[in-house]
Image (cartoon, rainbow, N blue to C red):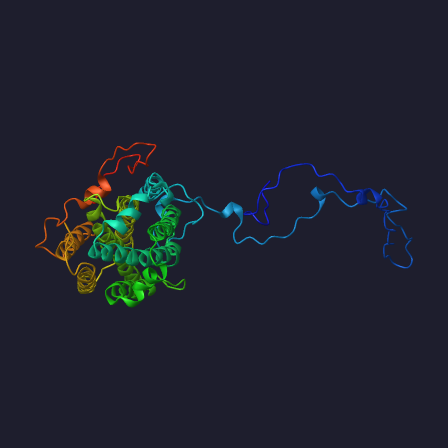
Length: 410
């Protein structure tokens, strides 16, 4: 039987206890003397013991407690879907349907079809690969990719939970974002599982984002842009605050998750393509599919806010944001890959970033920031999210969405 005070305690068998003899030795309890009711001096004294006909009124006849209501029930109007808004809405946030944004509900349903845990994937071969097959350069890549991702997913979890989700005024949006918060914590568990399984020094891996300038630079950019809206008292009816919020959300969806994360998995996939670290890469395939939905959802929400609130963004601010992100990615790629590994180089990494940045800009209806980049440097990268796999059910899980792996960014 579950111990509700300590759920982790060993369950106790549900057996009827035998009362101890001391229980039967207790004397039968006697009713306490009735207290006389206080009455006026001229009135006769009547007690409950003297007159059993005097009984308290039934609960159904007791006067109801006075509960102040903000609005009488007959004045409450049903929620009209047309009145909903992404932010600054005035409808009941607790009423899910009717939907104004049915696409948000579809994101939630699709996200649940990619449900998994890191324990589902066999990592035994990765342990052997890391210690016996990877070169020093490849170990450097593997360790620093995990160092960057561990911190980034915690930052993403906090941003959605503290800066974005509470600002939404339509519950169908919040429900997907609640799932997103869970997924970011699941991703963090996955990186920790890889780090533990391989036997890496956790203190060193987790502190690299603080001491390696090329990793820290990306984190500081994200902190600066996201912390400015990570407060509950922000007034999104103020046009300056609203513009800052939209810019922050575009950075988060279009760059942080849409470019940095999407591109960040590619060095591990390059190892996988050579038959190395396949367990870790399969873990990242699950994560990548989550992140594809996160970025797509965030971009769609940002566009909806721009349309509903009639937001006009400063093109120079958008350009500066992209240039800053590209410079940080270049520094990171140079540190990660000072020398190429087989099938992957710093040049491949940054050119793939530019190609993805153009795709995200197109989704947001912005001009391409890198018009000369029209082909992916890593044409196989999208396959990691879209390819269909047929595997032995008893050896590993299928990484396919139930409804199909392909997602259309356009």
